[in-house]
Figure 1 (cartoon, helix red, strand yellow):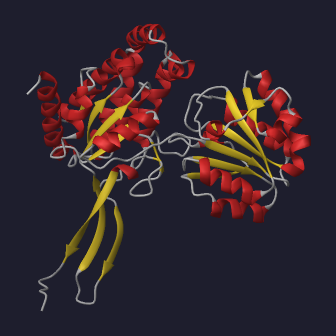
Figure 2 (tube, helix red, strand yellow):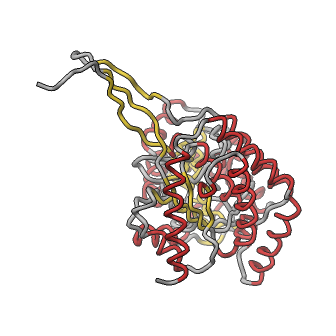
Figure 3 (spheres, rainbow, N blue to C red):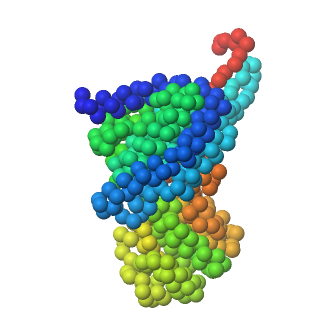
Length: 419
């Protein structure tokens, strides 16, 4: 057995033991750990920024894209936001022990469906060091132990954050192994982790499509998938075009390197000549490279031709594909063919058209007259998220506390036997 195998298996074994204890922890104790962790992050802001700088320097030297550098960067303001996220989780209701449903059968037995932790969660993620805190916080509050495997590009930042949270967990009286970070950049550690079905109950990956596909293929543990965010905004013939312009620009420009940013703009042919030149000018002023179909190019000569590959690409950058469509059905067909089930929006003043779009688009988040940028655990009121699931089983969309629980049935009787 290699050193990496020994390290990972021991972490997972300890996590299983810690998970059993954590499942019984009181809400007050878990909240105390979260608040201590938030305080610790704020106190250590300078140290975290210094660790992050080491990762940023290495990332730039390795040629990471601007989008990945943005995901990797932690400023004092972002660290304060991460700490605030932990405090928000502490303020949320504890789902563990919640009775989902309760009923009495004719023979007098009472059956309750009660929320319980999943057990031990394996988190595998790239670039974003804030995931270390978000995942640890959500897992703690929902009574789950967590084994974290961050990407090599954030090893120094992840280590600094994980150590602070681990100290807070111990200070609150919870088991030290409740939150653990795999302390190696060796890629072999991921394969070892994916084989630990004896100790890990579910794997939650966050990263690019190639990472998620590889994890899904190699894992002997159930995987909650988060595939690419090829998000669309459809501007209908009945749209308020000023509203549509603001939504489209926000969805693309506000933070282009994230999974809920718009990658394709679909515009109804009846309003394209009025809408596209104006929105294109604003997008290009913000530095967006435009790629369009023939109808788009006729209205926006600066747009380069869009290829089949463009429609199926998550750019995570200031690049946008634009297509003029004949109506709702064509827009929905395009989304069904090229979308990834993440977040898609319609801008329209027609209630019936909006309802048809909502019913027809099979995505985790479907928007009417709002930017796709809102698909986020913080914005949804979950305090934070461990990821945005594009699965249909167990969890879908931003995964907050309740998505990190399952349930069991508790049956209470007074001596009943089955005849």
